[in-house]
Length: 372
Image: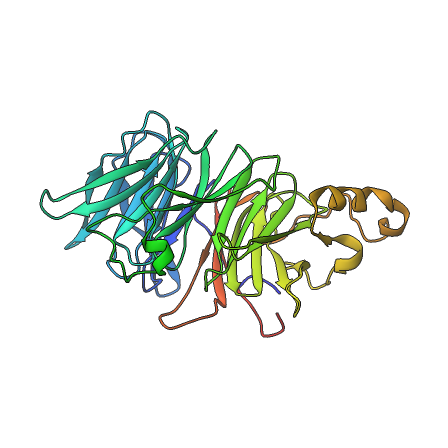
């Protein structure tokens, strides 16, 4: 399947996000600015430049309901941008960080957002009407290194994080006066703020791109050792499995449905993973290629990381005809894909369209066909 649209916006793009109606896109061109482009007819034109940060903007998220933009930067600050008339007005969020802010995401109800940082902390930010400002509560002393990604559970309370210490963790972010006891499962709403629900020690390398499935029953994240991990029933009786890749590591992932995941990263080509009727995950194909790679020979799905490594090393003769040492690029992306964003319409339960951005300065829109 080929990409639907390819837009060359800059020389390099750090991250991007879409407006609620998907008529505008905001991205960071690898500097301290955020550029907003709008589609006029068949041409994209720059309509706004958000200038408030002093260093590279590392995270952007655009809320669907309230039409607010939140940005975080290596300057340790965060801003919430509100559109007033034709201008975007920033509001400073006090994060109380002594290291760079690395990622950000609005909660499903958009009454909070989470910020991961290089200070080994996670900031949960919410709005105080009495003082008319955004404040933050910190989850401290839980991570041993930088927090690379955050992901909200559909219940608006649980938050998953990945870190360069190789671990994936799940925390409670229940804040009295912000969350209601009915907003999620009773067990989740009874937990204290910052309480750790689970710690997953599946990877011994940096971990990236954590995501929840639409139902919240499955958690997935990528390791820098060219592995992707899937965990069912986090918290109660978790069961984990992993898919060992023969290609470069993933940087970010996206749940299209309960049984379909798209992974992007250093291979410059989105990868499709699916789960069969028994719940066993496996690699299916590259989106930018028509040829389907057989999962049995090129990729292995095992319940043990060590077995996955041994499997790839034990039968070189059998796998030699399917493993390509240097697959030609020449696809939609020409450099590492660092960000994947769903293009979901109101009421959609399955994501059929999504966009990717990378270090090549492109924003590429993809549409899944019915065969996947």
